[in-house]
Length: 192
Length: 196
Image 1 (cartoon, rainbow over the protein chains, first blue to last red):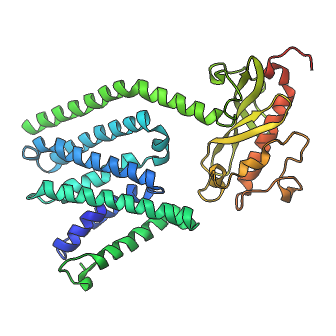
Image 2 (cartoon, rainbow over the protein chains, first blue to last red):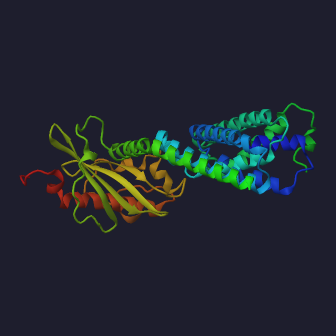
Image 3 (spheres, rainbow over the protein chains, first blue to last red):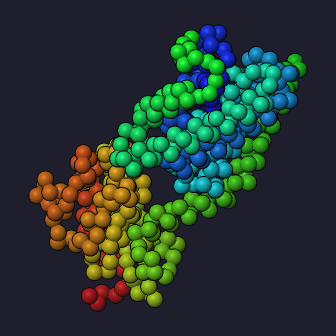
């Protein structure tokens, strides 16, 4: 999610982005960087993220027009707490070995959920949500595959640690921006 | 007022969903925990080397506090009624936290094998203790109490994990403790009359 949302922001609202949104996105990177050491972990985390973010958006639908501001935030947090608890229990029940490897990161998926709720546009929300979820899943899988390959295939130990994941994510993002078909000139990328 | 009501309904719904879900998954969670525990603790035994369910009958373990470690559990694996191995689960203090090992010892006092059940050592250093590719614990297989239980740098028989001296020493001491414990309590552990 953070990756693909940042894509959208980079392409659609350059220059209008307040700083705190940047912080939000950065905070929501934690699960993506922390629990993608292997392809299996990355796939599990990606699936959890897609499920959490999707369900969170669905259960917020009946509340969206009735609650505003702080009340909406509070309701959103309450629902997230329930969703995260259910997800953790489900992982323990049916994927315990993977759940132990994932550590606290499934619970931290609440951050990208909040970011998604905050940053998704009001018109075309569902289409944008689906696009971003697909992007997130792809980013997870790609990161997981690259990290596993670098760490196990090439013996690059850094790739299995979180800082290595951040570097790798940056490289992948740069590669994507370089290869991405689009109208934005490459020079514009990354400027605020 | 309407906002407060909606929030209250949301809170009640969220809480009750989580509680119902917990109730519903509880049996599956405890089942999964049991399975994982048995897999972790009994993986040291070669397949087909025992035909009982060792975890169902934990053995009493008197004097479980050893100099460098603590015996957390002891199990007897039997084949056709005869003891095939004793599995000791032991906890030692590693570099970053407790290291829990499962150690299988043959009735003749030979170490069959050992495996990490739990550890929080630094990833890439002590953490490679549990790495199946490094398989550092393999060097202890078939060793006996009469070997020199120390790292080569301490004039012993064993290689250390690169960059993880504390972890390596802790594991070696725990293995030695387990062998000594087996030696001291072999009749209780094997459950045979004193005919040896």
